[in-house]
Image 1 (cartoon, rainbow, N blue to C red):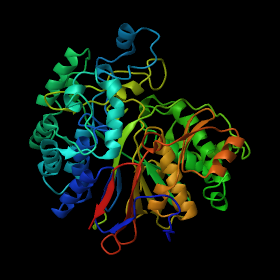
Image 2: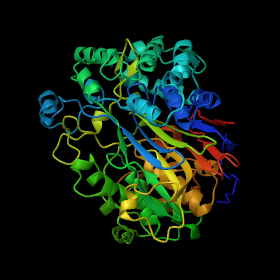
Image 3: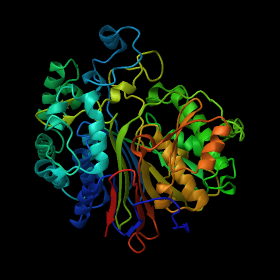
Length: 557
């Protein structure tokens, strides 16, 4: 790809060119990963170390009680990891109706009854055991040091920390852990999280067993019981992450790969499958026609995702049916280029997530995402070990349907890593079997980019918008990252960044889109990290980008 590196958008970032790269939304997280590469580790080692550090330096988005997903190119094949948590064995519709009333639609938004079993730590262990080079304990060292010595709060993290205080200060353990002076730390103030350092040491020494059935799990069980929850150490002990086959869709000679359901990654594939029926490159990159078309394609994608996607065993339709080319052609015909339409998508929530990516000179690339769901998640923090617990259980439904809560079930999930490849001498579109992941090896595909964009339902929207800019308009990863974005919410409602061209905003309004222009890019428009393979990783290396919407950084050597 011959990118245009001219950047017409306001940015505080430049692309990074290196043979070994880590890109995260906090500089100390990126440096943690880089330390592992300098120590002789590979991209998986770097990603795990960065992920552990991110639980400390960006607690507004993730923690030691997170879920996670990963796509890993090991130099020979593409692998998917689903480390999303499952419902406690006590969770049934009857459990919630007795506590919250028969009219309750979902588990609560905050508190212990929003906490499913966190999967991130188990995901780290699984990645290390299968692909890592360094001892697992080594990977925890940077995070332990940061937790115990502390770090100075950066601006974006501090803004979100302070904003969450009013809602969460009454949740058990929150003030003790995150309001050290009865308030959120200010920019430049030292924050220490020694309880989390204790947990990280236990996780390092036990390779995670302290967390899954050991002393940490038992501490969480006691904490939960004291605060109205029902999750047990046995729920933790029974948890295992799952290696899965990525799903994919061809677009402009490349293939975008996503994690299969229970995640929403298929939304990006559906939208791209619809856009593939149009000459997007023939439309002005920031013009109203291009933006309108992308918004409508995304609406169609969400309409199907919110109706059908759940735990795979509960889905009424298959992934192959949802990605069928003839079906997507029929959906594309519904788009009216002159007016906005309501295709019946649901009303998604806002979220808190970190995404990171790492690549090494031997060709290994990792796309990794980790989340507490809504900001600080449940707001509940087990105090002895500093486990900030996610609220992913809130994503279950209590009403009959594919996503209805059940013991041991995984909820619909918003966090999604992405990976781009290029087929080797393929004479046909991606077939159903290949779409499920078979044949995703060095014999059939070339790795191109590991990337992701954070932010609840913004994630597939960000995957699509940035990829269209790179593949249809040849904008470089950093330029595509810096460009203004929109976010579809529900019905005719969208948010647009204040930097978007005013004529385009007016043109969208004239077509019936109901818009709110937003200045807070962090919450509404996500943030991305990108690593594009520039050729032979050991010779040309990579081009990396980090989103200016957060405090992040791409680093390398």
